[in-house]
Image (cartoon, rainbow, N blue to C red):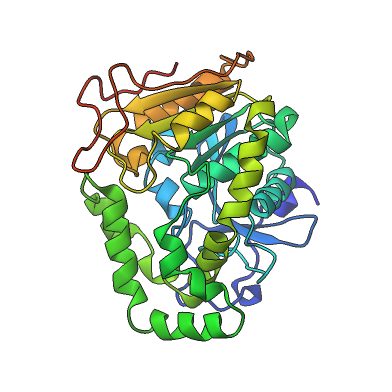
Amino acid sequence: MTAAAASVPFPRAALPRPERPVPADRRFVHTAQGRRLAYVEGGAGRDVVLVHGALLTADDMRLGPMPALARSSRCVAFDRPGHGWSDHRRGADESLWGQMETLRGAVRALGLERPVICGHSFGGAVALAYAMAHPDEIAGAVALAPICFPEPRLEQVLFGPRAVPVAGDLLSRAMGATLDPALLRALCRAMFLPQAMPRDFAAAFPFAQAARPGQTVSAGENAMALWPDLLRSAMGYAGCRAPVRILCGTADIVVNGFTQGGPAAALIPTARIGWLAGAGHMLHHAHPDAVVDAVASLLDGEGGEVRPPRTRRPAGATPPVRGRRGPAAGSMRATLR
């Protein structure tokens, strides 16, 4: 299938029946493996692929760093498998490594050339997997507040039971009709802390679609597969050959950069890490300029050299302890090092 043919929107009648109509900005691509993914595209120039995190959709990137990136790049933000308006195969989409290969199929179907893969949170783990598995096909990976190592997660408690066949589907339908819409909004507000959820995000993000039963089932599958997936990733960091940029917020209460992104950057020989003082988990909304800088450094071919692993931490910083938010101010712009 040619790139032009792959990017033509499919008739809406051919799509699964979502709870909400397909937005006008969504397009659809079929991969050679028979998967159909939804995406949003904007801008012109070098290719950048944007991958959202858990519980969200491509609209997170569309409402976050995509407008700034699209000033100089062609940006393609995907709904991950099982999220937004992309299709879902139960039992086949739970692995972040499997999702990475599905996204790779979409990248190839669209004819994207050596893109930067930029992912947030769970999407950051997908971006790192892409960098490890296919380093020669991309310009590099940017991981924003990435989850990098196994740890107990709230998603496993809230959504893990949805992964159980039949019972999980019934539970998701019951919760989707009662508690999930309010729960998702509350979780999103917590993700933005200590910053407030932007009004534009609150007004434009498709909360109803993100809270549909099919997506919460997918979130549960992702959560339950996270530990073995991240163990596989951790074992591969030292062998990563693609250039990597990691951005972490020092006030992130969702994914602790001092135990996740920081140690991963120390293990990945081609990585540079930037710290955003006072930024929370949704740092790509608060500091899109830092995301632009990280992506631009890879498109410009900077920093692909392999270096010996070393421990990294912001100057003067100590790991956050209970009752503390981490190191104090400094520049709000990330310094990659």
